[in-house]
Image (tube, rainbow, N blue to C red; front, top):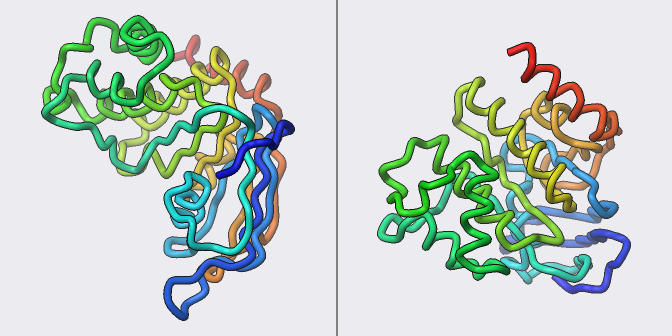
Length: 226
């Protein structure tokens, strides 16, 4: 991923192949600064491949990815925490600006104040997901990539983590690209949804959702009523 896109994220993938099989073709989109863009498509259409390209993990494609200056945060489908390191040490591995003090701040922001010394396997799956989100925000990302981060969770837990994500973005705004197969989840979180066609994938259509400030007010109302 190259820097220099001061006006947000600009993505062009003209061609991505695995061997002879074309996975992505003529896919182009932009994300404005602070915009939350969800990518929705059927299983196997190339969503995770596209996210790996955006993350710089897969440079073998024709096209370009331009991002605003700054660091990249990423949340994977699994928490991917090192079990032999404490929660705090897992976060310190990403070298957050502010060091240990910043780690304590972000753990408090995700509801895990005082849990820095805990081992990941002593936490519930929901807590582990919170740590994974905290790790991504700890670097003060210019762009945040999220690959189905709430998959396999029950509805109540997934809903609470979506509320947490909204609260973090209100405090620490950044550009988000969020991969999901769940249209309802995308509509709950995103400012804009890009629907991807089956492989070779491309943007088939887009849907503009209400602005984030309205969704934040709705989320706050749900919290009060709950």
